[in-house]
Picture 1 (cartoon, rainbow over the protein chains, first blue to last red):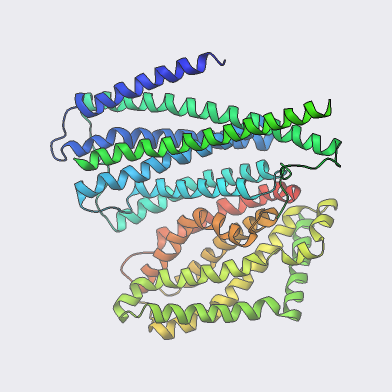
Picture 2 (picture 1 turned 30 degrees about the vertical axis):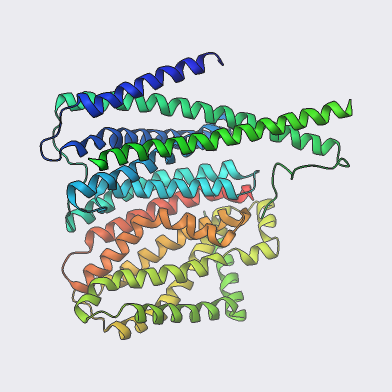
Length: 239
Length: 44
Length: 225
C-alpha cells in the first residue's frame, strides 16, 4: 500500500498539469466572455467533486446509523472535510468569474446559492464534530448529515421558485457546450477526482492513526493513573 | 485576464492550505507516538 | 399509539403548568422580544410602500431571534433534574417527550409572536393588501418549522461545548428554505403582488419532512446523551 501512494500521487500531478495546460492553452477562447471563461474548467469540476463527496458522506452516515461501523464514520468525516474544501473553491471561483463577466460579485442564483447552503450545512456538521464529546459524536453527526440531505431538495425548490419570481442573471451560463470545451472540462474533472481521492485516502489514514493513538493513550492512562500525563486526556471532556 | 489567474491561484491556495493542515496534524501525531514510545522504554 | 398521545399530553401539561407558575422564562423572553422590535424599528425606517416589501424579512428575523432564546432553554429543566436519564431507562417512547417539547415551544413562540406582531404593525404602519387570512397559516407553519428542528437540535447540542451557540449554528443553515418561504409568503401577502400559495405548500412539505425525520431519529439522540 505504501509504495503505491507516491506513484499515484505523481500520476495525479501529471494529470493535473496536463488538464491545466488544456484549460489555459488548448481550449478554444469563448466568444463573448474571452479568456476569463476558462475559470469554468476549475469551477465546475470542483462543484461536481464536492457534490459527489457530500453524496458519499450521506451514504456513509446512513451506514453508520444502521450498522454502527467505525469505518463508515471515518469515511463520513473525511468526505465532509474534503467536500468543504472543494465547496470553498467553488464559492471563491464563482464570484471571481462573475465580477468581470457580469459586473457583480454575487447573485442569489440557483447553483451558487445551493452551493452556499451546502457549504453552510457541512461547516456546521464539522463544527458539531469538533465541539461534541467523543462518545456520541459519530451518532449525532450521522443524524445531522441525514437532516442535511433531506434539506437539499427543499433548498433547491425554494431557490428555484424564488428565482422565477425575481429573475436575475444566471452565473455559469446554460445551454449547449462546444465539444472541445466539454473534453477539457471532463479532463479537468478526472484530474480533480483523482486528486480528491488521494486527499481523502490520506485523510482517512491519518484519522485511523489518530484514533489508534487516542485509544492507546487512554488505555495507558487507565492502567497507570499515578504517572503524570504530559498532555491532556486525549478523549477530551464534555462541556 | 488577471481574474483568470486569481481564480486558479486561489483554487490551489485553498488546496495547499488544507494539505498543510493535514501535514501539521500528521507530524504532531508522529511526535506523540515517539513520546509515547519513549515513556514505554523508560518503564522497561 | 394512545400511550404516545397520553404521554405527550401529560408531559406538555406538566411543562405548561411549571412555566405558568414560575414564569421565569416567559418574562425575560417577552422583554427580549419587545427590545428586538424596537431596535429593528429604529434601524429600518422605510416608507409605507417599502415597509410592506421588507416587513416579511424583518418580522421573521425578529421571530427567529426570539425563538432561539426560547429554544435554548427547552431542555434546561430536564438537564437540571436528571429527567433525561430517567426517561432513557423507562419504557416510555421517546417520541412522546419530543412531541411534548415541540408543542410546548410552539405555544411559547406563538405567544411571543402574538405580542410582537401588534407592535410591528404599529411601528411600520402595516396593512395587508393581499389575502390576510393566509397570514396565520404562514405563521403557524413557519413557527412549526423553526420549532421542530430547533427542539431537535437543542437536544443534540446538550453535550457539546458552547451549547448556546451550537443551536443557532446548526439550526440556521438547515432552516434556510423554510425561512425563505416564510419571508416570501409574508411579503407576498402584505404587498398583494404575488400569490403565496407555492410558499405555503413548500412550508407544509418542509414541516412534514422534518417532523417525520425528527420523530424517527429522536430516539438516537436521546440514547446518545
